[in-house]
Structures are given as structure tokens and as C-alpha cells.
Image 1 (cartoon, rainbow, N blue to C red):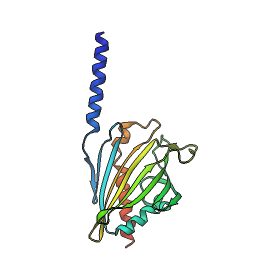
Image 2: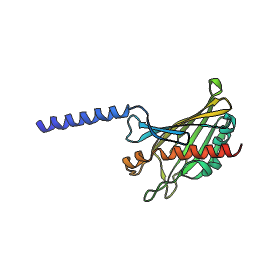
Image 3: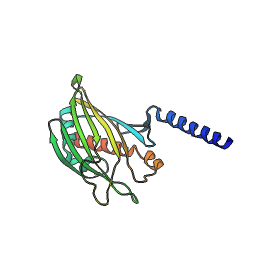
Image 4: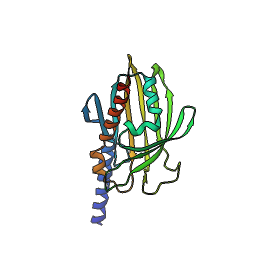
Length: 202
């Protein structure tokens, strides 16, 4: 009886501690070259989410055009091996993206529903929603279980302020500590690539 009570107390404490962790605020993880990356635990997940911010010397229209050109993601979007536009309808497009994972793990892929909406003050919000069952899984590539977030573009004089918020569940035995310790790399590499594309094309 005492053993059962002890186990129950341990389980309650673990649950409460996880719930507290899941509510932690954003913490700075990387701050370099005008790019800041924050991370935190998402509720009901062991994997961290990220929020990355920067300002680019380009208009919202130009920035949006680059973000919507799926075929070019391999040139600047962090760790992208393949990218393809599958379907387009009004302000919604469906993008297939294969993401490179380090050995011994297999690459991941996902189809993202990308919805673009105009907000007040000339801001633009791009909502990203992973749809794992949109297409048949490919041999040798792991389909991610979940992926969602958004990119917010705000005008700043003649420049654009970018906020990129995202969370994924990579699946297939990716060690949590490994994923969380390296999570800032992808958004930093992505925004670095985006800045380079936009500012070199002025």
C-alpha cells in the first residue's frame, strides 16, 4: 500500500513539474548577426518550440515573394534537401519539404499548408500547418508527426521586421535532448539565408 502511494506521489510530482516546464517563457538561445532565436517548451510536448526575429533591408512585398517561391527553398531555407509546390489556391499553397537530418537519423519530410493573410498596419501573417497525410510517405524518409507555426512580416520604414515561430514533432526516436540542444540552428540558418537572398538582390 505504501509503495502504491509513493508511486502515485512521484507520478503527480512528475506531471506537475512537466506542466510548470511547459509554461516557461521564451528564453534567448542565440543572438548573432542581427538575428535572435528564442526557445521554450510547448505545452504537452517534450520538444521545444522556437521564435526567431530579425529585420531585413527589403519590402514586405519582396520578402513575401521569396517566401512563396517554394522551388528555391533549397537555396536558403535551413537544411532543406528538396522543396516543391504541390498545389495553389488563392492565398493558400501546399508545399512539400524534405529536411536534412544528421546521420544516423533519416531525413524528415512534411507537406505544409501555407496560408497568407493581410493584417492591420500593412502587416502580413503566413500560417504554416503540417499535413502528414496529404500524400503517401516516401521510402527511406520519415514523415514528421506534427508541425505548425507562423511567419509574421511587419513594415519598418522601408525594411521588414520578421518573426518566425514554429514547433515540430520529428518522430522516430529522435533523442529529445539532442533536438532541444540544437533547435536554434535551423531558424538561424534560415533567416541568415533569407537575409542574404533579399539583401544581395537589392
